[in-house]
Figure 1 (cartoon, rainbow over the protein chains, first blue to last red):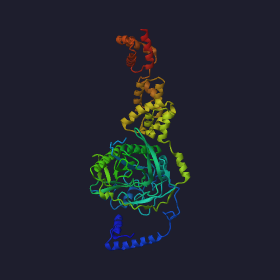
Figure 2: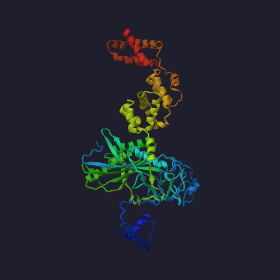
Figure 3: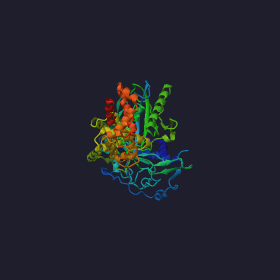
Figure 4: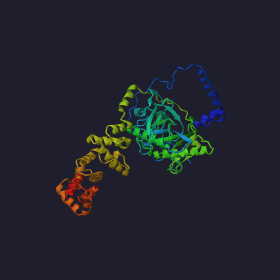
Length: 96
Length: 483
């Protein structure tokens, strides 16, 4: 399986990235290199190997106690927003 | 059996139900997830998707989900993981929703539903944990969408059924059962109108006898039990008409419009799904130890089906009555609290099912907000049992008790409704009634014994409802025999 430039543009679009033609070309090559390496890994027999989802050995069987603490202040919450009114975050209108 | 009479086709329906959990804090942040705070006041940097924050799993998200799993006969995965569901929308500040994908914590369960003339088992594919998004407000500012992130990170479970449902009526019963179970477990308030229970449906049709599924559509935005039933009925009929007229069902997502009572297509943009799930690296795998599982099993309350059986078998209630009483856990609790004080299931059931439910319906309130405590209700029933008041007096006192906190006995005295069992008081009235109705007396003596009711009624009226009807009957028949 190899990646086409359309695949690259599709993935870029899902990530809200705008790529120039040249960038898309470069990414296509990079991605094909990565997939080539995966193909190489696929030569190994992994039939009896559990998938590894996390690189640490930590598992959670103890969890956070269900307790509500103080939230941050409303002013702090909106402080870093590019746009807000007195109550809400404000973003460009989503539906017409 | 099916509500949509169609000999040729049957519908295949699967439901996805989202339930908002009644935890004290959010799924991954220690801040309240309660409804109704001022906008953007119940947030932490994590809820806002700020860089450098890390999620920490709320133990009650795990516990409540397992509770629901056990109550619906699911298997519980010893190990499961969270996954990121990636999409861009302004009310999802991280750019992904933390959910579960390949390994739900609960799977392979079932529940039973009852319809008018048959029972059915509906399989549950899975129950998984996830977080809610924030709220987008489109109609307050003409140029902007406004975002409230209080709800962002609220814990949800998604309950996915097998495509075992065949009719809108079955879907309705299934939802009712899910609502009943989450309420019994106290993991969700079950309020569909307020969005704490939400339902999407997958619907297809196929010729009867065919194994293979037809092309399905997905229905969204059905915000009440009735709307689910209506939307499914509409959609099934639409699909049958389409196929019958030579068309083909197109796989798509449809929105139910509760005002126009029809479905409409979602715009393709809203539909473009490619979520690129991958394991959530910020949360370790969830391990459910056997200790935890045992602990949760211990905590499980008596479930509705079991309670219903007990009410019928042990308390001797009629099936219909037991069904209404157990429909809501809180009504059944109320009934049993009264029963703890006064051991007369039928008398209590009678008052709860008639008077109490009438008031709840009239005022559209829950039993939790009902003003008469079980203690006071039993005092009232006891007055009746002791023959201190008669049934119509009981009803008047009950109505007065709704607003008045005095004891039923005090009220009975004040309202002058204490039943008079004093024959010295009753006899003159009875004599009066007999004297002023000679025709009826004659007919009674000629054998029309049913007229006794007429005499009792007259005496009750003359005594202003205070007479003990049993005693009145006795006295009157004695008098009439002698006359």
